[in-house]
Length: 476
Image 1 (cartoon, one colour):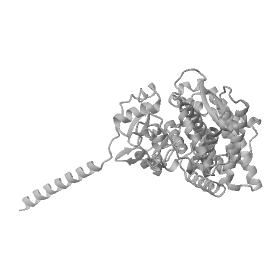
Image 2 (tube, rainbow, N blue to C red):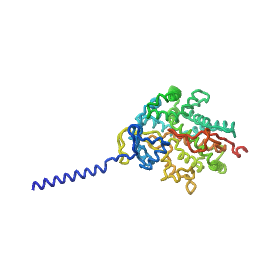
Image 3 (cartoon, helix red, strand yellow):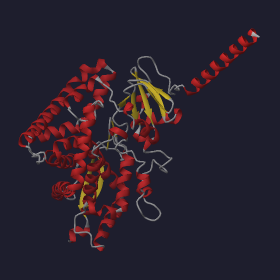
Image 4 (cartoon, one colour):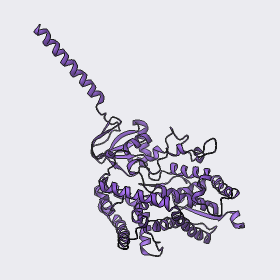
């Protein structure tokens, strides 16, 4: 009897251990799929074409969550909106990778959200800026609108001086954006003849180039002496701008004139400034490519007069009446994907995502370019079609617009989105209302107008334009 009981207990123990093993195996984190990588170098074919395009091809093969290695660093790539929202809504994936080559940006930019770690101080400052933005945009919306329209008037006057002439408006548009960000964030206008204004222009225009150099220097340290001189010039400009900003903030504090917490808003302005510049360029590019789109926007604005709502200047109050215009701008946000891979995140601790094991320190990037071309939501995603955002009843498709990851998602989403959207809406509508925009050709030749320059951001190729007053404006 004792032998039978012992055998039974042994069999029961084995059965329980097997059951526990099966259960544990079933719920154990899965290994991430991904391409074969070389030691030290990592995935050797990443730079055979644009990074975001190559990563999109890999996603088609390995799924919307996969990994690869770049110079010994583990990189987790998210390629669907659902996976990105799930990851970036968690604190575990809200960190920033520490790259030696951009550490100066993290150190200098006190509270500059794009590159700082997700610390308690960062969370507190982010909440303060969001509260300030809400207060400014909801309680004093007219003041922001006035700043933007004032900048447009200046832009319009300069375009009128060169009406019909072939011009490269890139620098002019850049100045217009900064002339808006200046008073919005600092409470006073920036003098365009001031040397600091030129430093600000140079530092923001050089952002795309210098970030490429930073990452090259990180992955290929032996090249640092070669590109160090170019980085030094950029850093000197950034330091001058930072000193100017800090001096302005100290003056505000000493004079107790922190109306609307404008110093906090400066941080939001820095975040959206680069994206706005490039999107505005892509807006102009898209307008040229579709004269029909220009005419539709102009006709829609003209129709406001029939409703008794229009007095020569488009305002934010008109937005609800301009369905096609809203669809056009949303399609630009989707199609352009100016920050194709966003700002890299980092896993702050080991965790899981959809049963995949994500080790602490992993770099996590979202392929926003791929997400904005997901055929699950966007039919014929490679085509520029504003009509996709217009429903059969003629109303704007807000549900589809929410699928566009123009400003990233989650806890580190760009806080300047509302300001950027308002700014682009007012500038583009008033520009099209007054002028016909025609792209004559590209500065460096060629005819592939929709092929932007590639770097950390996608920037439209510089082009020569003509701005001609619309006939109804000439007659008025």
